[in-house]
Amino acid sequence: MDRNILFFKTGVSMYDAIVIGSGVSGASVARELSRYKLKIAVLEKGDDVCSGTSKGNSAVVHSGYDARYGTNKAHYNVIGNAMYDNLCHELSVPFVRNGTITYALSEEEVEKLQELTENAKKNKVPGVKLLNRKELEEVGGDFGAEVCGGLWAPTGGVVCPYNLVIAMCENAAENGVEFFLNTEVNHIEKEAIGYSIKTNRGEFISKIVFNCAGTHADEMNNFVSSEKLKIIPRKGNYLILDRKLSGKVKNTIFQAPKKLPGGGHTKGMVMVPTVDGTIILGCDSTDVDDKDDVSTTREGIEAVYQYFSENWKNFPVSREIPEFPKKMIISSYAGLRAHSVTDDFIIGEVKDAEGFFNMAGIESPGLTAAPAIAAELVSEVSKKYIFEINPAFNPLRKIPKQFRDMNDEERIKALERDKNYGKIICRCEEVTKAEILQAINSIIPAKSVNAIKMRTRAGMGRCQGGYCGPEIVSIISEETGIPITEITLSGEDSFIVPYETCIPGEI
Ligand SMILES: Cc1cc2nc3c(=O)[nH]c(=O)nc-3n(C[C@H](O)[C@H](O)[C@H](O)COP(=O)(O)OP(=O)(O)OC[C@H]3O[C@@H](n4cnc5c(N)ncnc54)[C@H](O)[C@@H]3O)c2cc1C
Image (cartoon, rainbow, N blue to C red; front, top):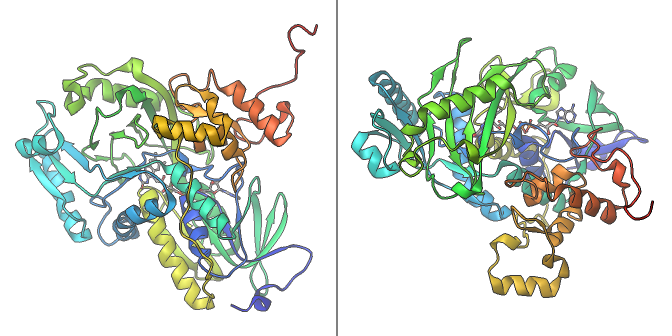
């Protein structure tokens, strides 16, 4: 690609390609772009990558049985699912194909599952089967007495979504992509060639723009196009159960899908055994106004709590743990689906805005589908603009083994290499000071408490950071030189220490 065609203005930051947003969509696009010799920037308004929906979802790599045949959702879900083994291998991200089961409690629900089985066949989802009660037991264990059958999808899997997105961003950065955090796009103008992107940190110019702004993708599109989009944020609330239950749940288990009052359907409640050993329970589905408010709602949490209290008996885990173990709830969270009024992913070049590419309306199964969408989209764009291959592109991201996964011998060796492996900071998740320092000094540096948490799991255990939180604040401050009063939980004004007090004994 001839740079001179693209660089046409001085005094501003100029790029061949700019990606707005660093969720799973933006991260996938950035990594795909880094396969080519381009100057690429990612603009992210959060203080860290993966600041939006990609960090708060069900963590399921869907098989693709329920995405309506003929839609973008169905197409990219199935291709995306098939990419996961290789993708996670390249990025050193844990991924487990544990299979999903959608269970039925009535003949009416069995009929719904029959429809989904046929939909799965059309979508070419491998191995999907509608099982009767006996067959279901053979696959998934002893379900409750009221369960009369279930849909088995063996290619369904689980991944840690923020782990994956951070890995993709780090790999993109290793391959030359520049990340601008705390950089919010406020306006975009079409220029003679390309786009002028106005942010709180100055102007960026690029001929090609990828709009991966999640719940804000409609605003980005609407700056440049007369074909307006509308994204409705749709909230889902979750509960997390302690890692003490690790191994007790094998498959991801959904209730039969439910119709939503305003049309469409939700996959319903789901029990997910995560790759980290916790269990996720969720979620409800409610349209909201605020595109960034991921606070949990009382109604949402109550809906999840009530569902699992009443239906715990239906899940195989109830044979060993008969009652819903409410004391095992260690945390809760909420995520916002970027629901497009078209009810499908909106992908591709905007008709009246050449060089502006949308990945909008990326709601579920977006985590699964995004790598496939990005691969196809970037490949098409590369042909249109004749990108030159980057011969130095390295798809592999190597990371040190985590202390909690090391055997005794490996721990001794790690300690010999770096004495900071000898200091456990997070007791619940066995995270050492060495790992926290690695996160702070990584290619996309973690400088807030939540950024450390997403990379190391420090603060994600039973005590939820009660013990390690203050230590982590001190380590960030010491290592980066940022005053302790300016360290945040997750950027903006989420300060933790309001002012410094005197040290005991020095009064
Ligand atoms: C409750 C729930 C459950 C789900 N479960 C699953 C599941 O199990 N499996 C699955 O496959 N999918 C699931 N999904 C869908 C999946 O999470 C999303 O499709 C996916 O995370 C969307 O990624 P994204 O990158 O498009 O958006 P996001 O992750 O929201 O990323 C957008 C990024 O853009 C940034 N941004 C926004 N505006 C601006 C701006 N003006 N300037 C700069 N940056 C900006 C944001 O800060 C954010 O980091 C679920 C979604 C929800 C809400």
